[in-house]
Image 1: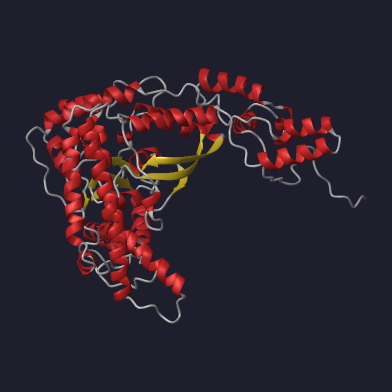
Image 2: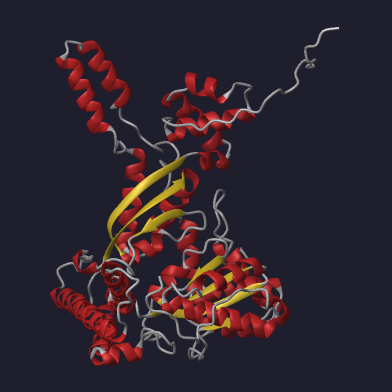
Length: 530
């Protein structure tokens, strides 16, 4: 008898796993999609494919048959530089998004520059805008310097810590305080890696936005995906081809250029039809009108920084309340209670407003992601919100920027920094004066006759300005946020929010809250711990 191992015909003998590099994003998406329609291996598929065939395939299956999951397979990296903080917040507001942005905690933004909207020749609001932004930057610089000096007096450098590490850590703490003064006009830069499907919805959402800079950003993203990508190896490839030329191998040099310096377009097919979304535009206007009617004369009710709104309403009421919340500046609790008192037919009408303009290929608005067990209505400074905004495992309903909620004084109520360090640095009066002046200027610009005056006025709002957002999540995400964001190395703004989230959970679900490894925000921390 043979000693060889018997393997039945068709039996799998060994799994093969290999990484793929060098394929264009749309070609790779096509090759992966072929697994569902072809028995070819990935190597065989990629060898026989080209951009033209990929385009033909995507035109058929993506656009005609609606197989949008194909676009999830094509991932594109973008660098987005010199955009305002306002535009950056809008850009990254995707639930399926990966990226990194310049940190206001670790970088000095004095040299960033700032965005200037088109005031259409209206000199007075344009001048007020520029003066306000420049004043905020001047106070930002003075506050950074004075708070850093105060921290040096307060905290001595331990012998175990290198002077450069000591200085770097205290400077970051000073930025933690001073960043509250940065206006939304401040320029930043970010990198993102997204699927073509996310990119398509992102571009459409940006093109629909009321702010001109954001609409322009949508166009630039679409153009970048459809146009030639920047090739990081271009210089080296050109130098190699030049060497071949010098060696008398002109044919090989040309072949090298065709192979290594060819033009690559990352997602020309998958984003070519991305355009402004009429569903969102029409629905936004209808919801704004409905919210104005329901909330007419209702003042903004006082609310805590974090309100864990208990579930007492039906799913229908939650949907209607969330839709109205997205179009107002009132708290979720206040809106929920008003909606809960309406007749069922009126509640159904509000829900219909959110869906009746929906087109054939439109996803329902984010407000329809309803039914989560925990709903945190959070009112915090824009700077801290930008950190909380990174949590993608929850549904976030974000209200528009406004000065109606006032602003936060950095670190108010905590044990590590804030009012006391500002006062100690002699910067508290200047801080409040700059923020009050910025809010007043925003109101004056909004009342002007300049084009898009209401949107232009938002840019002078500092990061200290409060913004309201509704975070819906399950217990695991609440546990994660409370543990991560309350850690001593974090910024005191979101540390306080994470602590308040924990306390709210503890009041409503004490037996579950004991499983959260939260850091007590009320206890002093080591300012040199990062």
